[in-house]
Length: 343
Ligand code: NAD
Ligand code: UDP
Ligand code: UDP
Image 1 (tube, rainbow, N blue to C red):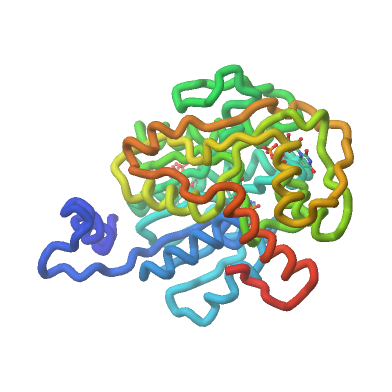
Image 2: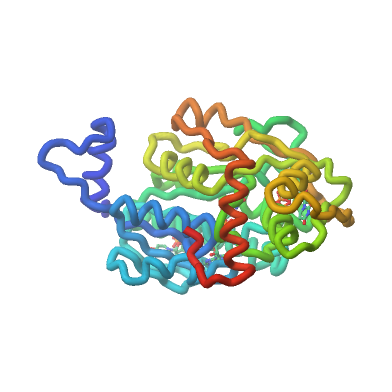
């Protein structure tokens, strides 16, 4: 059964974003799996602000209640502790499926659980979407391109992925999640959207999650050396979280299945990133080289032409503009002035 609010909402979209006469826009009922995590909690803020009702489904593996507790008194907000590997019955219009640890340190911690989350968890959420006629958005990743041989990466590139390596639970897991999503779309007519997200940073990231931006920022604030892995010449492209959330919402509301790369094309070596962190926090921060991790991709940069053309989306916040917003959140959390929601 499809919900009437959703049809009404889509009639509004078809009318160029305007609500047809006689139809007042009612909020949608939206599930955000992984909504207590870094990206999910920012998405929840935007959906609540838009007037929707949001159900967060999270097992708190890497998410925190603190990220969403500012909504606890809102009757349009609900938080369910649930693991997506188990079936779930809900009645909703849209599903943003984010549940999955994203930092290499976290997803390698229990690789079998990571692949179950990606495969069984995604299957369950697609089964839910099919049963209630909800639109489903998968947050896939640039890791589906593996250690890419094509640069920058376009959506038509099939990638260069090691199927038996230490990162496979995540990148092969997400590739299977994409396959399931397309098979539910083709086979069961589920309305789906696929985003391939490139490295994203911002307030509310876990402080000790081992990702490079959170590590460098926390290290510089604590007056510890910045740990550069390998020779520091590997590259990544860093996107500020509000740009990503805008892209995810445009993708969900638009008419295109994807996949769409969502990332900031500004490309930095890890040594350049360390330099920007030094400029932003502490020019005297030292750099310490450490051995690199296994299967680390050498280069990564999104081609976002497709998202620009079809979603009218592109990132607005450069690394030098976004980093200070993350630094103030991290310094409040590290030095403890009790502000928890990082808004
Ligand atoms: P995060 O770790 O902060 O958030 C993931 C959330 O999912 C957490 O709240 C966690 O508790 C929850 N979760 C994990 N396993 C679960 C399970 N089995 N059942 C229910 N909840 C579960 O990570 P994030 O950076 O917010 O990433 C969100 C999504 O975006 C992930 O799917 C990730 O793969 C994708 N992504 C993120 C980035 C990035 O740079 N942040 C890049 C590419 C893709
Ligand atoms: N599922 C769920 N919630 C629902 C509907 C389905 O969690 O509202 C799960 C269901 O338990 C199953 C998976 O989604 O494991 C796939 O469901 P589908 O109906 O597509 O397949 P089937 O149940 O026939 O295997
Ligand atoms: N990295 C680093 N120092 C750190 C953490 C990571 O130099 O303290 C490097 C890592 O080797 C990789 C890049 O930074 O080349 C990005 O790592 P991250 O874990 O943030 O994301 P991903 O590898 O998933 O892109």
